[in-house]
Image 1 (tube, rainbow, N blue to C red):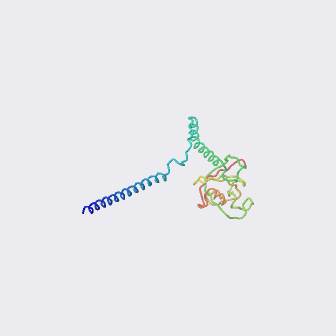
Image 2: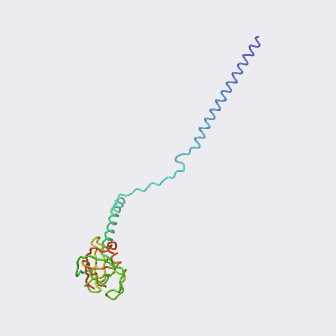
Length: 204
């Protein structure tokens, strides 16, 4: 009886020690795994500043340079507007068409208002030259052949300089019969008949 009781106590102690060792081993394994995970995550995470390009610091801007740059920015739009104004003035002074370029002065010797029509076909003109619808010419009942006349469309202010080389039109209220090209230049082809102001140019 006594021997068997001692055997049981020794067996329980051995069994308890085995369990404690197993628990201790499992705890040590879990701790080692946690430490390894922490170390691995620390090594894999790159540092924010590693490999980052360092931008060179901008040199300080002197007050004179800043003022000069601001003045240049202010002058830019003004110069652009001035250039546009000069271009617009040149275009306004430019003769509308080539008919009287270099041959007539700017003096207006006669002027008036009337209606103007146009024609695109016809026989030889009264001057003897063939009719050309693409030439900047016009017909008038009384002006001398070769006279240069500036014609202004009163509907849109577009103008053209034509040379008189034919007679007509013979319709009451109309004083000029323009070629197709001349009427197109003043934007009246679709209307057919337009109100105009004419200026007979001197200095032929």
